[in-house]
Amino acid sequence: ASKRREEALDHILFFGPPGLGKTTIANIIATEMGANIKTTAAPMIEKAGDLAALLTNIEEGDILFIDEIHRMSPAIEEILYPAMEDFRLDIIIGSGPAAQTVKIDLPRFTLIGATTRAGMLSNPLRERFGMHFRMQFYTAEELSQIVTQAAHKLEKPAQESASVEIARRSRGTPRIALRLLKRVRDFSEVANEDEVSLSRAKYALDELGVNNLGFDEQDIQLLELLVSAKNKPMGLSTIGAALSEDEGTIEDVLEPYLIANGYIERTARGRIATQKSYEHFKLGGLKDGLFDD
Image (cartoon, rainbow, N blue to C red; front, side, top):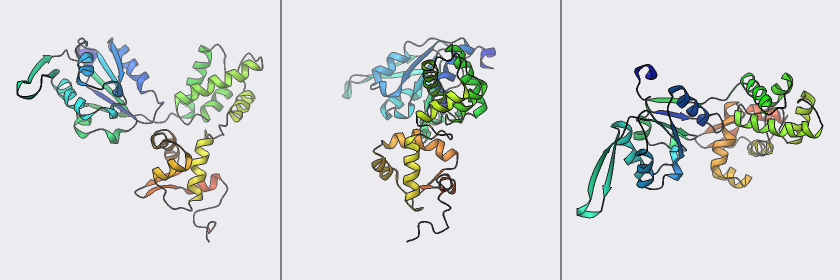
């Protein structure tokens, strides 16, 4: 509709776990709109001048893509608000009583923000995005198509069953599926095979430590830790210390898939393993007295 009206799109916010294609979709939107896209990440915008340099180089209808937008400082957000709402840049020159505000009109543009932590966005910033899209995990069928297409581009075709196997172990995430495909291709190359077979895919993925549910060593360690807690909630900082892992990695990378598939439950008091986790480790149930003293 915006293309037919020959006007800029409303500002767009993509949120969800990493690796689901937020940057890729932003580029597809730019292509569909016939617009130029400028890409940056919030941590790179440290001062007002950094943002001003980006905005003053934008042309009519351009797209500005800001990744990790939840990491933008409040001071930078304040400058971004009038740019998003009124397409105007307010710059303060000088300090103290002699300070002056210079207003610069900007061409109409579209801001696309991407974040793995929508809850960390301030309400004023979130409300200035006209469209919000939550990125969902892909199905095995969708990932299988992605793997098959990528395999052809890598000039190492994959049997349909091999594509399905790689997809099934990719945690619903295209980025992981493509990474695993490249490693499986390496195994196939060493074996002098013309294509990736199902048996080779299974062997390679097992050797890489990725089980049939897509769990790797970190996932197993996390689930074992929560199961050993005997159904007592465990805080994020405690989990991080026990696994020697950054809390952000646990919350953004490990947890989303495990929560979405019912292996972990996040409560107000912390994380607990679900019945599904106990069954995965063949430990019975939560209420069968397994861990009773």
